[in-house]
Image (cartoon, rainbow, N blue to C red; front, side, top):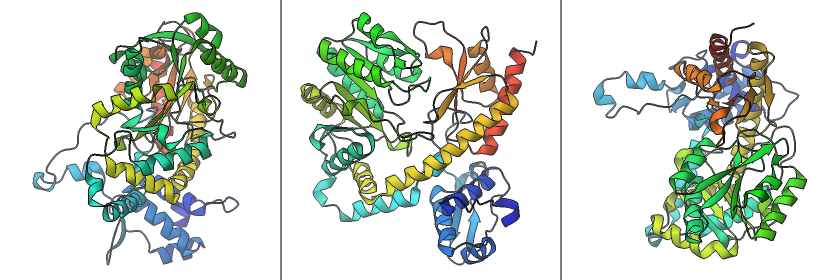
Length: 464
């Protein structure tokens, strides 16, 4: 097994993470087939010259992710694939799983198989057994107090935010945070908002669905053009300063200062979407703009990129003058959201489990980004890769004249979930490109996906 499946670099730390990644890749690539019995932890530790604790940690993580199944007396085996489960008799599977969107190269999606099921389950169980009966009632509309306290500490420590627990609203994902702000802005007579150009296609649709008119503000190599924002005359602007979506640039220090100056001079509101700032691979993290101007910034984040979108857990911190309007809208929206999940996440933050998960995910995401870049350079040489090494996506720039929408449609038919850059522009125009995600796929799948993309690209843009 050592020679065939596992390659460890003993000059690097985190041997348990290396072993976990190697076994996960072997499973996803089919080299360890469903039902395969793995060696005991003692036997594999001896074979690889590792401590048994390292192997135990790797097995436990993969069991938590659903890749392995461990039963007393039966050892540890590779879990069955979903398609195998679906092929069983109907009485074994009461409801079929819904169709899933393509995940190969789909941006903005973490590896859902890395969700720390075991750690989350223990946190949830601890909360469930320890909570008072009264805590099962409707929660505080702004969110469980313990989670708001933990979030305030975490955001201050990790993102250099200046927030207190009383100023945080726990939301059902970032989407609800934007919806709450859209309503509060409309109530204040501000129905027009500046929006990065290019910017998130999904967020654009969400805001327009809440009757907000978006005004495009150009983005260049230094991030949002604040002079253009000033000329636009809007009362608020949505920005992604830590890792602009989709271009991947970072808002330059001078632009940050200018953005804060714009807000204070005009009374404008900066809406900071801090969607994937936990993941930086080649440089130190940059702090959030909110930490520079808590009086002018509404700060939005969630666990959708770090843990899983299905949790529907996010947060919103707003300046004092917006707190009452946002809190009232939150109460009207859902009476407080899911308390059990909020308390479980608070436990995860307090125990250090969230930090440990992020360290593991950061290491793996960097490995996958490197694999995608290498595959692009092999199979699509000459195309420029842009954006800093951060987050869950990168951008591939295409030659002028290439129809990136047509290429994305062809790639979708081949099972790829990438996005065309032209779709991200409100005003249209601009160079074509593709937004590629890498976090959800191990290196072997990324290699195959890029080969498929190269074939699609060659079909619409043959070599000249």
